[in-house]
Each structure stands twice: as C-alpha cells, then as structure tokens.
Amino acid sequence: MRFQTIALCAALLATAGTAVVAADMPTVVTPGQEQWKHQDQGNYDMAVLYGDPSKAGFYVVRLKVPANWSIPAHTHPAIENVTIISGTFYAGIGSKLDASKVMEYPAGSFISLPANLPHYALTKDSGAVIQLEGMGPYAVNTLK
Image 1: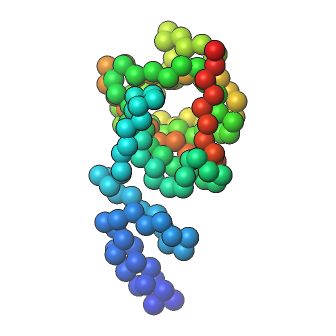
Image 2: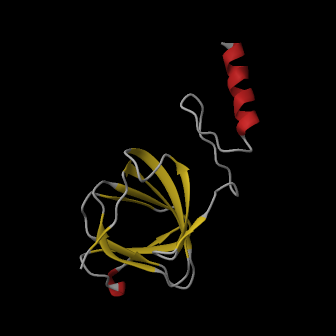
C-alpha cells in the first residue's frame, strides 16, 4: 500500500507541469497551461481541458469571453453545466435575448441548464472565464 501511495505521488509530481491525457492517469491542467484558441464565430477564446466536445462522451472546456459580449437565445441537446471561474457573467432564460432580465453570476457561481432550455448570456463592462461541462457532442442551436 505504501508503495502505491508513493508511486501515485511521484506520478502526480511528474505530471504537475503538463496536461496528461491517458485512461489510467489523471488529467492535470494548471493555471497558465490552457491552450486557448480563438473562435471567430462567437468572438471568444476556448480551451479544451478534457475530452472532445465534438464527440460523444464527457468534456470540459473553458471559454474566455470579452467585455460587452453576448450570445443570442439558444438551446443545447444535453445538460450544460457552467461554472464562472473569473469575472461576472450574466444569463437569462427565454427564447429572445433580453438584457433587462439577466441574472448576475459572479466568480464561483454554478449553473446547471437542462437540455433544450432556451437561454442567452452576456458580459458587461468586463469579460469572464467560464467552464462548461457536459456530454458531447456539444451543439448550440440558435433560436430565430
């Protein structure tokens, strides 16, 4: 038992500086190791932390959205879990974006949105970093 504990600690220390993607090892991403990629459609940056949101299975991504950003009313075919990592994020429920009806979610907030629930989001004077978790494939169905 002592050897297993030492081996696990050694493995965690060895991987502390890199993201590990192996079925039998933990995935570790420390602050600053995110690999941000700009998403022109939507004007935000995204970092995939775990899985592949375009495929079936569990995924974790982070979005870095700028100040005065918005996404119109939309739905997702699966549950979407949102954690606000930094900044302030605003979201509302409904089939049309209405900035007067959004709720304010400061860093540390968590939102779990049921599948197919129409919602929208925005930022105001400052941007935000949010983490999305769910089961892929991830899809955004914008409402008309």
